[in-house]
Length: 261
Ligand code: NAD
Image (cartoon, rainbow, N blue to C red; front, side):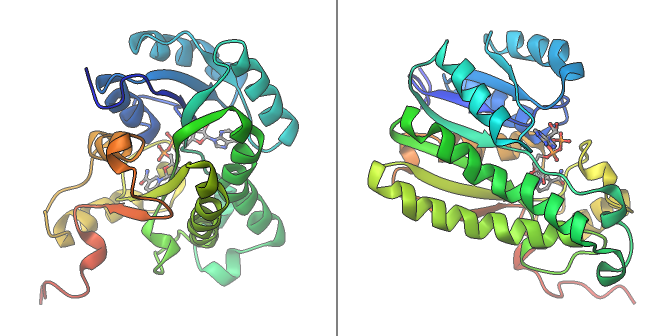
């Protein structure tokens, strides 16, 4: 019996086996959670159904979070399987590709700004609004952020602003839902090569920089993120809400830790 036995958790954002959401799903399954999955596009359906089967789930639902109608429809569908559940993982982000390459001020546009914030931040609150009447006491909601919310990161640009908004969203949502004994947290993950990350210019170079500077001298894995996510969604973390936990091998604590000249 794992520490998530008896918990039912919806996982968004699995697109491939490199996805952070897949690492989270695996860890939660290992700890005994029952899982449901949502995916963005029809063309992902059979892939996600196969992934879900590997983790003993047959609940696989379509949901593009850019529309409230889709979100409502997805939770209505979920009700056919689960009347109540114990939380969800929001592992969804998007900004148009032109926003993630070059100088921030040159590249940022009204449209890019709105899209990045809508998909990467608002959708977390939108999902909570639509599902809170299905959430059991001691539920836990979790999202994924990045250091670009706090510090300037080359090419991350408007996505950094969207992640800053997402982190504030975590705090406001935690305050709104606390009275229902529902917790809301975020993980600020170190860089990992996923489909979303490949849209960021020079991401490979960022990974080797990260590895050389980070105190633990290695990159983080989806398993590292998954284990912390499983803990945060379990009753072991009952006293933690409104937090952003860095799972980045310590990168965020460093200013200058080596001089290579
Ligand atoms: P990924 O490409 O595997 O996952 C991103 C997911 O977002 C995909 O499943 C995609 O389908 C989904 N998505 C995008 N737009 C959507 C929409 N409109 N509706 C529904 N789903 C949509 O990449 P990932 O790196 O695993 O990203 C997961 C989360 O982790 C994101 O929030 C990302 O910003 C965050 N994160 C990633 C890194 C990294 O280096 N990879 C670091 C820190 C945080």
